[in-house]
Amino acid sequence: MYKVTDLEKALVDFEGIPIMGMRNKPLTLKTVLMTELGSYQGREVTGDQLVKAFSLGAKIYESKDDVELDDEQLKFIKLVITKIPLFTALVIGQVILKLDALKKVTIPPVLDNK
Image (tube, rainbow, N blue to C red; front, top):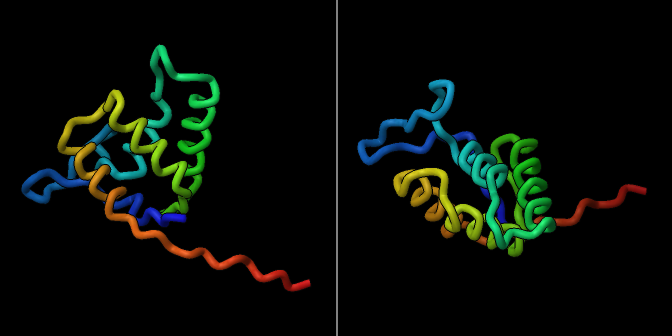
């Protein structure tokens, strides 16, 4: 599993100034991932891939400031955001670098207190 943190942290331009998105709010990793996954389409995209994109977008939306993803989910997100990006290189470049920098974490199983 991978733990994606700082979902609500603003993405910045080259000068370190937050990039503003819709509704004059700072553009965040969470916003970019939800937008890219929610807008995924294409002639060769299957129904299963559309459901996967929707489900991952919903998972990220429901998370607070971090989300746990497995290898397959992380690879799928990278595919979606690079296939037909909706954002500029300034934004997508930061997202890819953030995802590439993730370290695998071991999520301990929940102890059963029965």
